[in-house]
Length: 317
Image (tube, rainbow, N blue to C red; front, side, top):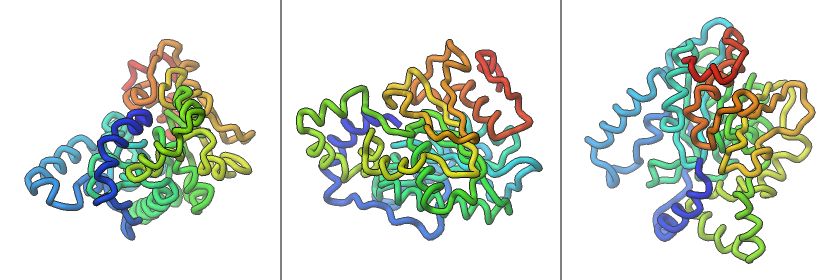
């Protein structure tokens, strides 16, 4: 989520230990749910009592997500929530997940891109690997629910990584709608920090420091090899409907216009949050808790919802 904090905190605090015990998580044969994804892989980190406490906390907070017995109502598809960088499948969605469940959706959320022995933060592995995890999770949801397609809701890196799945891993045939907020379609220059580091010759040394703890971090930068490949020949795939929400006050995705998709595709809609409500000052992280963002997401995936989203939507559950 907060990429700039990742550079400073993760690089300094974690890089010194990364070389000794951090390994990229292998892509699981069976994707894990949001609860088990958060629980550390070793009791050397937490006691059994602490693990149980964390599990109960997440079950209460999630309120209906990852119910593998859920069957979609008529006119609805399963909704899969895709978190952002250094988030995970539960904390990124404490606001939106229970509200979508209350609207009657079968809601599912995965935690992807984890490193072993770093239980709290995810989305760290390179996005190609994370997209493969998403692919397996989508297949699991389709199998459990009997649906033929899902809808995706993403935040931050969750707006970017799924596009790799759609374009290169067969997701086009399994996803009907994809909406995201805090979007990073064309990367970020970190308020000019990225070109500044380049000009000082510091880009490569810092990347070398960060990569052991976050292979995805530099993939998010404007002009990265990952983004160049992803956007070559078009940034969308035919047949999938897109709605990307950006904020003029996004302090992570800069310029904020880099969050917009650029294909001339009739199924693509870019939304500036302040065009919905000029009083909305939400930046990158606060969009997770923004009722206007939520109602815009709900309007997109729920045809029965009010399609009018404005400042008054902040008063709507």
